Structure formats: structure tokens, C-alpha cells
Image 1 (cartoon, helix red, strand yellow):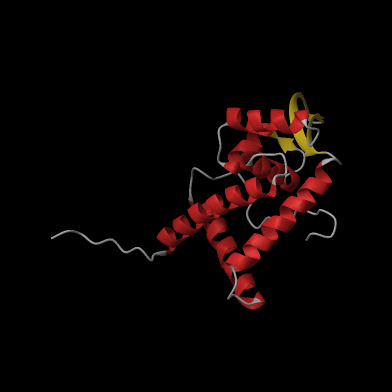
Image 2: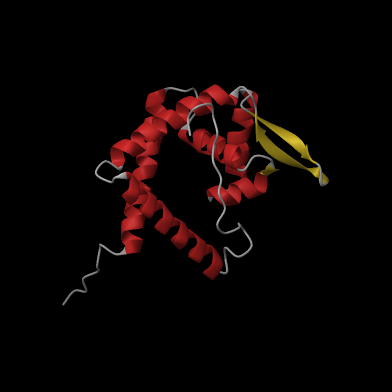
Length: 168
């Protein structure tokens, strides 16, 4: 008799939603024709969220190889959207920051992504959305606290926002 796995567990649902959202994100970024790839868009958002941290830390937060991130950053830097600046605490290290030129692109990107997420969360009122976010933060913080591979990589309970013009 074959063993039947339960498909509606929290882990399975989160995996499915994550995969589907990543594909939707990629298609949305491509359709917006902003002149950057979905990987570069994810990188630009992460740099805006973590402004001024080292490249290796950004790669860790994104879950990608440092060389992949370096290629994204090279292209974003060549277009003037990010800059690598000297780390004030370690003159051998470089930190990554967004430039003024990135503002309009980030505004357009975040507006498009907000519209996309509004469509995907249709049927959830403001209270349900807030509860979902709160529960996902608890899950994330528990994972960071309980998984020894994640220990020390990021702080728990962090609040970061990309602030671009009126798009909040």
C-alpha cells in the first residue's frame, strides 16, 4: 500500500506559495520592461532594504551565491543604480548602496509589485493581511532562532521598509 503524503501542511503550502510568487515576480518584472532582469530587481530591492551592508551579507540574505550577486551588482552598478562604497569599519571591504537614479525605478517596481500582491491577496481584508504578515514574521523569527545554520546570520524582529517616494 503506497504511503500518502499530506499536501496541505504549512511547509507544503509555503513552498508552493513561494514558488508561485517567485514565478509571478519574474513575469511581472519582465512585463514591466524596466531594463533590469528579475534577479537584478530582487538585488536592487534587497540593497534598498539593507542599505550599506557588505556584498556577502546581501548574498546570504538572498540565498544566492556571492558570484551570482556580484554579477547582478556589476550590471546594476554599470547602469548607475547602485554603488559600492568603502566600509568605514574595514577599508578592505565594500558596502552596497542605492543611488538617486534608482529612486524612480524602485518606485515603479514597488508600485507594480504592490498591485500584483493586491491581486493575489484579493479576498483577504486588511485585518487578515496583517495577521498573515504577523504569523509569517513569527515563523521566520522561530526559524532564525531554532535553526543552527541560520544562527547569527540575521536579527529577529527586524523591520525594514523600502521607502520610495509615495510608494509605501
